[in-house]
Image 1 (cartoon, helix red, strand yellow):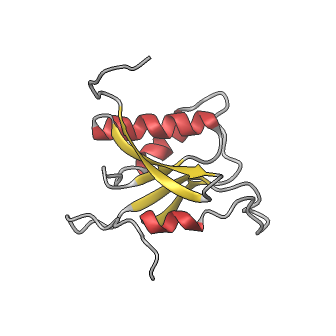
Image 2 (cartoon, rainbow, N blue to C red):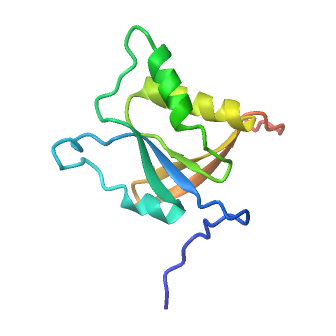
Length: 130
């Protein structure tokens, strides 16, 4: 009996990438607070920013850097939302701008101890259930 895994190899020969927005707390001292290796089943892991990055008074340089680092993001890639919430917001905005509002996130499920992919479509037209 084998393990079931998601097929993350897109048909256009592009290997999916999991963009880790910010290094995990403790990475600098060699003891990351969380183990994110389970995200590898969705693609190659690529960390964008160091652990202590923050948006302070002038967000311009950090936005420029994130735009450059996310330049190759495709709709088959994923964002792993780690770090400063302001930086997470900027990264999602950059990717949404690049892809017409469609992008993928990985969400950690504490109970199941696994990542689940979430497809975001900011312009989806549908019925709102209240």
